[in-house]
Image: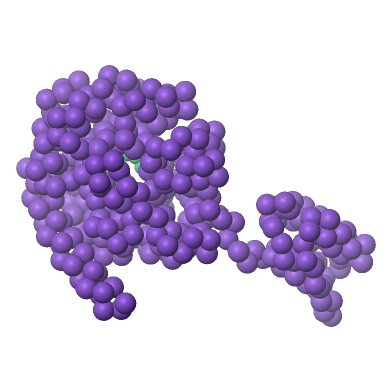
Length: 349
Ligand code: PEP
Ligand code: MN
């Protein structure tokens, strides 16, 4: 990192910074210009963080050269991470993008959930996604059916052969969830719930980590780093839109550019969730395709057997007939895209 000192930093202040760096095994070089002293420090930022250094008197600015997310970074691991499930499904790398579909919340009607799962299976999807614990903005909204919903998820997945995904909100539910679920989801609102990140980091279940409503890409990757730092490297990122100033027509702003940016800086797989990203049914198909074009490793779409009466996110959920139409077109698009990408990489090599 490079530490730029204030114009009027005293010799004593400069020396304190240098001593602290040297005490932490940094290699230090510095230049005293007419105005600023610039210190060039090479070493391990985990022993002395930029945050600590910036607190020293006389420090103006610190520029970090290596990204702080180490385990998630492509510098460290240039090859794409591929997550393989026991049934052979793979996410990441050059594998064909996967599809995760299902209702926002798992409701009382098991038959409804099963119909969605069967439609997903018929359309070639690999995952059934349904919420048992719902992070609702209002305490008066439906909060999820908890363990009973997880039992429904498992049953529907056993009947169809799909893999299950469900959101964890509290670390104390982890052991129970591990009995029912193939992939844990951490929702946008919990992306910086560090205790929860730590807890899921200690198991080895794959985790879908959603981008927070106001997370920068760096913060998002650092949240993934928290999980990986505990030993669980099976992290799948999910772009689900961020808050911006214009919510007149869409619920969130779908940050499509984040996908290639994250691919450039990280080896982790990333999927796209146009349902939450836009909040609008009619935008699911174009934004899912856009995500695939820019390199997403999968899509997540909300589908409900009766969207008009759904207990959560009905407005952005596709009905089963709509889903079959949309998914049919996404599949053809995805097949063409995947074929072109495969030919392209074959030519390049
Ligand atoms: C969800 O997946 O239903 C959900 C609540 O998503 P997010 O955390 O992205 O808002
Ligand atoms: Mn939802």
